[in-house]
Length: 315
Length: 257
Image (cartoon, rainbow over all chains, first blue to last red; front, top):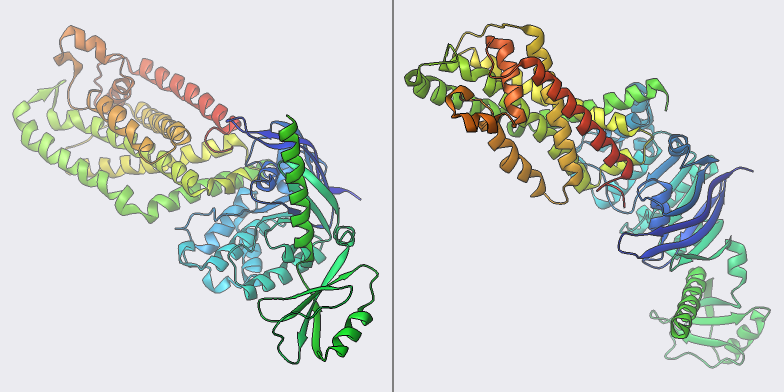
């Protein structure tokens, strides 16, 4: 299968000498829903900026659907749609004009551009706002406008840099549904996000980047299998004043009084329930804690920081 | 990018530019019309009637070509510098940078946008001048060539200024401290024959003097300089500024990290 994105030995050194990327390699398969995760300043936006031609690379190779950005930049760009982290449209222009103008930059004639703009503005719930200047839109609408603008030329690869930052939960969920549908229809999607729950819910493959290096690049399933324990949240019939002591299980109460229990891999849940029964605690519902990826992410980044600190000491 | 796609991209940039300055016409089209009308009334009518003949023509007829050219120069420059810098400031320039539009199309598109405003203002000022003097054309091809090339040249100047600018102050420094003095000293209001020999020599290094005089030659048939030398100079400057602009775009000066 063709790779939607291939990055080899990518290096970026800014003018002040700061090395944001230290030779990263990354492959994203066509049709994938891929997450690039990392703490602030890890190199996520720099990587995507280079792919989208907003940042000049210092060294390395980038290919989009086989088109090298050094030799076939125009072909690479035709396959790319970009949703940046910050609003980057003319706030005085009308919604419809912003989207059709972007299509024009890709060489799409106005009639076809208008049809495509209408399609995506309708799908993203912005058609009623088509004659509204962008500055009059809410934050969520502006984010959706940037998605419509990125899709108007029907790119095969959609890159989203923090697409749901500052968006309320309801809207975030509807954007997830939209993106999942886009991916189902064949668009390869790469996103960066701070909401690890988002990456866990949407993505099939994940790379974790920190200090300009890729720490892991693997499938979500494989990543989650690394977790030695799983965390369950139990709602009890009667509120608990403190967490019970359960033999073989670590548990505590969360901020809302629910019982949170860590269960090691291979450990039976029956033992936990028997002990709870014996203590007269009745469980009315149970769910897994959603942000498992977050735990793993924090652990990896902390380990990397410790290694970096050690190397610094040694130096 | 295919040729038809490039043409569509070019049209998109030009339409967007024209839409921008038409949307804010009280800031872009009205002020030069008002200012030039005041020039015609005060300098042309009130003061001009006491000055008498200049270069063989009454003073009003003498200053009209210079004032038209002044409006074209400042409007062409202002359009590109403010539009391109605003795009940089709002980061909407990224819309162009992520797209496959070649750099030379971006440049030609913005220059065409600047020329549209500059020539539009030139037309408005010309029509206004007809209320004050009879305007006859001595050499139409010279008029058209000079005004088009001068507008293109100052659009390019505005583009380079916008590429280099990092804050709003930077886009007003050149028009205020370079463009305006050079225009006023470029023979708009007087013939350099009136100046002492030394200052005549100094005036000859002012490029705007050549443009104003070439245009005046096209309209009145009189000029302080050879109009064909003036055209050659404008073409040379256009070539140099185009090369600089394309080089800056290729390197991403001020627009890519």
